[in-house]
Amino acid sequence: MASVGTEEYEKGVSAAAAAPPPERKEPLKTAEVVLRFLVFASSLVAVLVMVTGNQTEVVARIPIPPFTVSRTAKFKHSPAFIYFVAAHSVAGFFGIVSTLLSFYGLKKPAFSQKASSHFVIIDVLLLGIVASATGAGSAVAYVGLKGNSHVQWGKICGLYDSFCRHIGASMAVSLFGSVVLTLLVLLSLYSLSKKIPK
Image 1 (cartoon, rainbow, N blue to C red):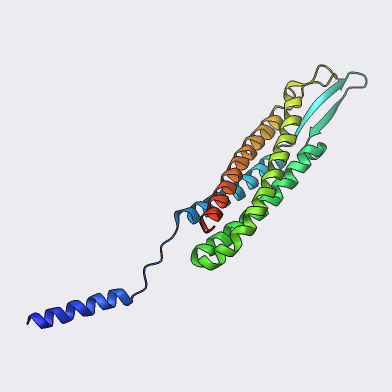
Image 2: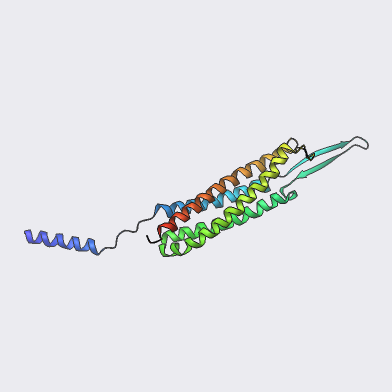
């Protein structure tokens, strides 16, 4: 009777040893997928808020003959805002592509190892582009908000308040996207450094 119990125990141990270990998902890879999705989402929101911020206002009233002069504020009227939209469109496109590839990498770790070195290079480039677009857009937005008395540039945000709110919100979301890209670059560099033999 004791030999039967021992045989069953030995079969159970050998079956457990023969079974492959359960595949463990790395939390860093999951964090990478989440950060890449946040890059896509922040870029998409920044572009949508920027391009929907059009506002038309009356800028002059002429009494004789009675008519008014209206002007529309659009992002297309500023090269800095056009650059902002283009930069975030590229970042959003890469964000969704890299999110899908990183998600695929969760299922296929061999693919993830090959792609991570390419991703970190593109992430650094995107960080530079997004940060520069945020800086350029914020500089123009600041002049619109505060004006510049030295060169006689007036404030426009008193007249185009809705447009300026859209610009400000878009810049805030873009700044968030820049921070997320910075975290993504640091995470990618950390993941690559773990693979370097000591």
